[in-house]
Length: 434
Ligand SMILES: *Cc1c(COP(=O)(O)O)cnc(C)c1O
Image (cartoon, helix red, strand yellow):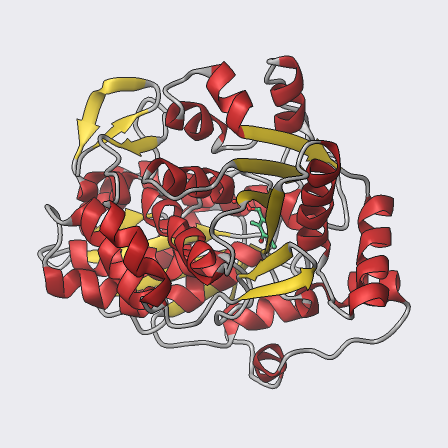
């Protein structure tokens, strides 16, 4: 499979180059040159396949020219090491729980695939391979846990001192092994600047191969299509039309759902559900894409005013805006509406949604009410409510229990080095710590 840039279809690169570069040199997003259609037999067998068996079929269809059968199996086994169960919440309404991985959020899927794939593509690399990550919290934990103990790759995580919650910090600084953490005296933007300067530094790049694992990387984006197939496999009624609502920020997750649909998965409509960072729902309404500075909400992992995967959505529909609008509807919700939904669903059904999942639930309900009488619906639960303990407790006015996996991180010791926000100091660190 080759990949082209959304800014220039003539700019075509190999899988390895697309993964190492992340973003195309013209700032475009890489897209698969050809989207394979899964055969009818695949869909007949799908309900009887395990998550991993299905994963192998789909990844093979995409990457059979780039990876050996053995590599494909290893990659899928490493990635899909936890289940994504479909759980009924109300009559005809299901949630796809994506939070059973090591850091209890859906980003684990992309991060695990990315780490394993990078290590496979770098086996003939003589330089030291280093992944640099600037994080304000959640990305750090998913990437660190995805790369943990992956051979041949060192990860260096930069995070702003005092700006990351204790629980978030514990989820990446307590791992050790190939995961190195730097607590930077500064803000998130300082961390990001240090990483960017390192990528541009000729001297450093001769000594080591520096790469990033940010969320626009195809190695994080593409594997997210897998759990949409798995959702359909678990659905009992395959005759009734299907609406899938995706709580969205940067729109990678929704884009991956559309990729699955383009590969033949029978999803009839997607709902793009957001908080008040409503740039995409507004675009779907008006045809005008107008990025804004991001606004803070209780579904903070979706506080994105300029969604980086937006052009992927258009590209998946051949840049046909009307087609996109006929396949994706968008709705946005306030924090008040989100909190009410969390309380009402908990009271009526006992199901506890996190603030992000609740936005997805609201989008689905609105679609079903307005247009979807003949539909059944799935909303994605992108994180475990325990990850947002204080928000959830405030909304529900009751205490919730942290899952054991999060609790376990809390008892471990933070290992990180302090660092100023000066590039020369960071460069010295990279040179010395080899
Ligand atoms: C990252 C994230 C999102 C948004 O996903 P996108 O792919 O950026 O749209 C939603 N919910 C949670 C919990 C997240 O961490």
